[in-house]
Amino acid sequence: MAETTPTGTSVAEVMAELAGLEDPKTREVNEKHGDDHGVNLSKLRALAKRLKTQQDLACRLWETGDTAARLLAILICRPKAFGRDELDAMVRQARAPKVHDWLVNYVVKKSPHAEELRLAWSADPDPVVASAGWALTVERVAKKPEGLDLPGLLDVIETRMKDAPDRLQWAMNHCLAQIGIEHAEHRTRAIDIGERLEVLKDYPTSPGCTSPFAPIWITEMVSRQHDRA
Image (cartoon, rainbow, N blue to C red; front, side, top):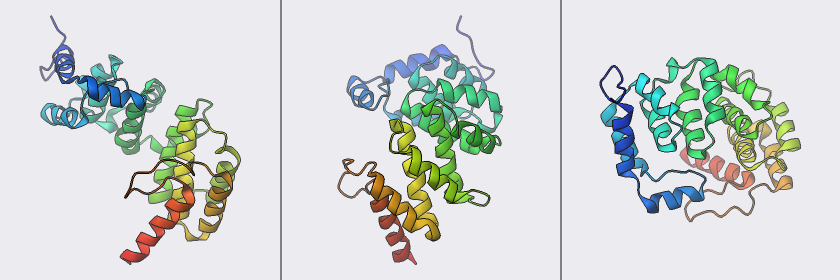
């Protein structure tokens, strides 16, 4: 007999539905980005909308270790229900890029433990965990910069970004761009660091999209802000 949550939905039922949504072509595309699942994200979101918020079910889906199940768990959980240590364990388990990204953006950022985890993760020796810390720092730079040592962050980025592993490098680069976009007094230095390090300078960018190369990114976003002013 399948174990059910208090709302009556069993993990087995949900896993069966996810299996039915599996599409080989979607999996092929996702696996190129390191995500080992084949469920269309629009269909996944539709399933989450139908299930609504179910914290118990979310926890059990997460425990399966299945990538699609974990993405669904993130969508139906209550972000503030997780303790600090639970979130720390989850981010260390989240190796698929999409799971990691959604966990940080949809759950950790809404948690009362976000700032404590930001500080702990940013200095973590695991570059994937450290990238989560830097993603939280990007959020602070944009929305609540009071108390942040922006020159100190630029020092760290200048020293470490060039040789950082991909996901950590990407998060540091986002932080560099965000500092340059949001804080005019540090803009010249941020652009200069980007120009010298050349991180993501040759990253392929689709027409109509902004390059992730920090000097271009900063200049483009500041220009848009001026246009709206």
